[in-house]
Picture (cartoon, rainbow, N blue to C red):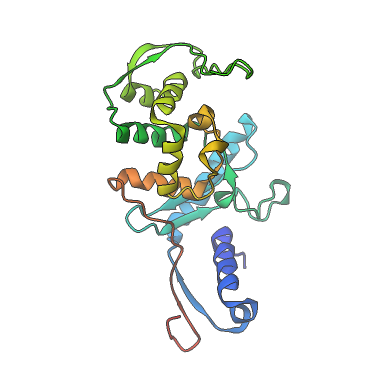
Length: 244
């Protein structure tokens, strides 16, 4: 019989082996109660299949999906690839745990730090072509919006809603790269490096993060700033029912 939720199961198995050793996991009769909601997992697997096919036209050969309970951090769904058993896409690799560039979906973290610093959704930013390079020895850094247009004076609220790149880079400049990295780490982005590793392209998704930590961090927006770290195991019992 095919393994159900294979990426989730193998992640749990690796975690148990690390904690108790191979022999205990293989022969110890452990009973592991996990956070997986299999009904939701099936829906997620179907969604990854369907959208994965559509994404191929944009040269994306694979897809993954993670879903958490924002209050508890319990991982309800983990689909690590389109097909665990498809070797042509390295299907057994769990993409939810691999570092990838998050693109514009990192922008809310930057705006959040801007608001912490005292800017507001009504603060005006000038969305005009800007060269952000201050070092003559370096190449110019002049980001453009996805549409190729510029929108002049916009509020931070409008800039975030419209995912405007120039305004986002200005917001990062105002918020400070160091401050944004510190906030991100407090939100659970453990895979990020130090502030000196990133420039202003950070706001456009230049820093690689994992899908699982990215999803968990967004839970903070639903929880008034409270971060729940991802949890996959509720409890572990030995063969006699004793909770380990």
